[in-house]
Length: 388
Image (tube, rainbow, N blue to C red; front, side, top):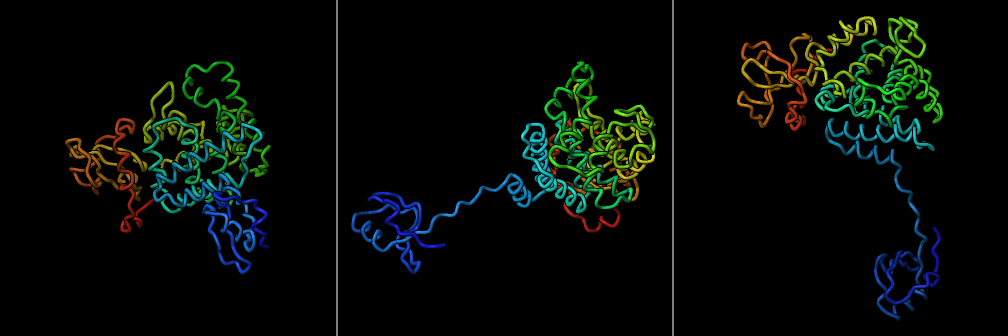
């Protein structure tokens, strides 16, 4: 970049320099930020001083800042919190035109979640299950996206479809993002205009996604059909069985399961184990029964993040699945007197004193969340026994 004469800056004694002043060889005569001390210095700078025009550096985009923040976050919990924040920003952007969201923005979230899942699926699912104390849309769809990944992997779908279905799970409710809190609060007594919103939101979501340039048909089809039901009782088209594409069936099941494990206006949250039982028994026929069996098998009787009481009075967290669905890897976090352990302790569900006797609701044991950082420390001796 060429040097420009300092005389062109119109400097006066006492001015603070916004640029460094250099001589013709590039040697600094006066640093940027310094104040001009007197007339002699000013005269000298005007005679032999030069400067370079400052290059305007554009501020980092929200996506670039997000990437940087996620890279700096050192824990799964911290990264998931950033992902939740980014999902919320992106979803609201879509419904507030002109939208600034692009596939590139969402791709960052999809890629980071996929990467976290591949590294440690039990931790990703477990942390989200422990934090599932509200029906916040961005938290729920991120949880649904992780369960979607679990099912897509179990079904042996092509890797490229994983991204499409994760993206679908994240955006399936984009059309109701502004109304979500009201819908969750008044679910048992939906007003007529809310019923209309619910009935039309899959088609509206597809319309919004197409408007920002999304053309991925696997993604769009899963969003459009995530309220179709296997027995034909769903909407908008009343499709049934295999007429509903596998991707839409996966996303629908993941959405239903994660919605059930969160509280809403007319009921408390289901325990993960009870939600699986409900899907298997009470909702039999509404969801692909084979996929429900896959989900039950993959998550086990005590899915990661489940809080349990042991025979000796301790409270523990199920942190990993094993090849035996009834025998998860346990970490005791609360002693029999109700005091937290400084460090979670490994417990064996085969031992009489530490067998599981009760599953406990997460919302009554929020103090356990402060121990999340210590629950999923890598145990190399356990990885060989992980299921899924």
